[in-house]
Length: 152
Ligand code: THU
Image (cartoon, rainbow, N blue to C red):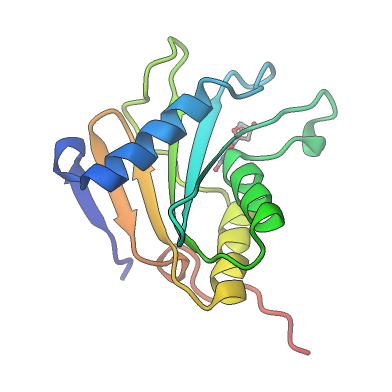
């Protein structure tokens, strides 16, 4: 049973609205000339810092990276001691408006979110926002059960 909450955008908290707005702003700066699928992510750290990321594509397709990982890797590279509290993700439609549908993170991004939870021993709230609907997960464990763990 997948645990999540579905809310109307107007019913999310002010802090979450701010984070979603950062994700939207970031999506508008995505480099996605091949897919024209512009994704934005915004990460809030435990100290309140907000970091944005968007998808960065490449003519050699696998060389690109998703918005979630751009944001999380930058956050973890810049603030290696500060836990990640939450991440908001959104996508624009071809007219540049926030999509009617939520985007759910790909498997690789889920694995990176899982690693970040483990790294800081801190659950990460995942906020998937469309034009007027928001899905919220309290932890990546609800989106990626049985994720890979390296046994030492
Ligand atoms: N993409 C993301 O940025 N995040 C996801 O969770 C799924 C897909 C990007 C990768 C690629 O640039 C484009 O969306 C189409 O797959």
